Length: 469
Image 1: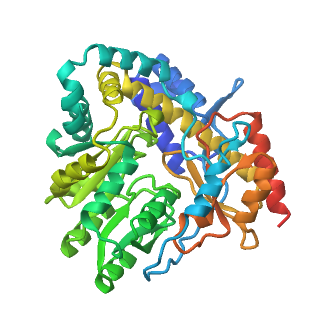
Image 2: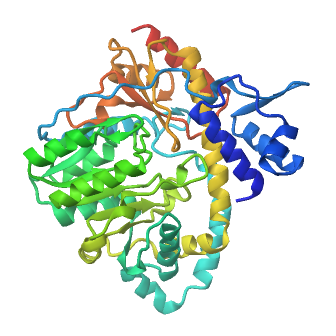
Image 3: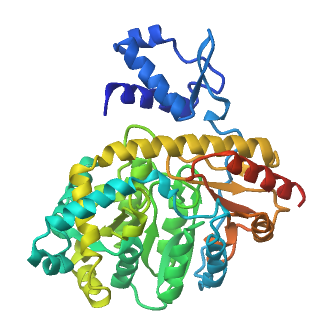
């Protein structure tokens, strides 16, 4: 990372923490140059970058100031009280009705599960596909089907090392996206009818997987900033025969919550005492704002109890469908299950990603992507403050591309979904994120698409619909 980028991240952290409040004057170029020991040109570059990220703005003859939307303007949601009793899962029809709304390209995609493909280096990936296939040895076409592309596994292992996890490449199983990895992990440690602890709210694909495998959900509430309620989890593990946990410890979907390192360590110790395996869904790991990537729970794992799942779908190549799992003690069993089902992810896609990670400037792309998402988050927060009812609550995650809105109790988010869709706007209503159809006055909105006049108009339209409830 260049010096000006480090300086920009330091100032961005001060803004996010509230040390530099909305409307506050940012230190002058001369003062920042002197206090940080850098040249004025470095400070200017940092300030230009912060402007691009939507965090500060220049005022003629006055200097730089923190933008009004750089911090949350609405209060955050309150933690819910999820039912701790096992629940049958039956959400697929509701989920499919929401996903069907995204097929029309003219619909504003606030309900989408992906960021805009315009943010991905698709042309550079295409060149990596050509390079990867050109250099692929004939025998590797067959060999890579079982073990996975060795260079791709090495590159993934190197990224684990950067966040404090020493991982032998042999522990990595390459999969058809993270969802296959998560499915395989569950199948390794459960049988139909077993109980699985999940988050509340939880990503709807989690619920669909449990429904398909005929597993029962034990919902554990999630705080919008701090993550899983460990006391509620401890109680559930004591009272109920939970066979596995499926959690997102960082940038949880849909709330965006990230657990602290201390809380992640405490979560691991709790599960280790009960010998309950953790399926750690970490597909948003690369989309953090700021200078430091969050450590996964996997980094605290001493005996292979954590199955850590990742993917390139949310940060680089959604259509390539390449994910992985660091399977710990279950790695061999996961690999065998994959061979019994899909045999292998696409060998050309693996070769393309291996080439890109080696030569394509992945970290440079990720920095641009994070900066774009941070600016778009600020724009959506500001629009919500302008257009939504004053008693609306909203999360403000430190990464990713989702906001979770808690509307006044009178709002029915399923009805809101239908009314918005009639106006050409999609959203994800709260009940699809719960096995028990809770969160009826909540919705998840995606800010992962470049913000424009159409986005602003859509937020104004949603505000008018909400005011009519």
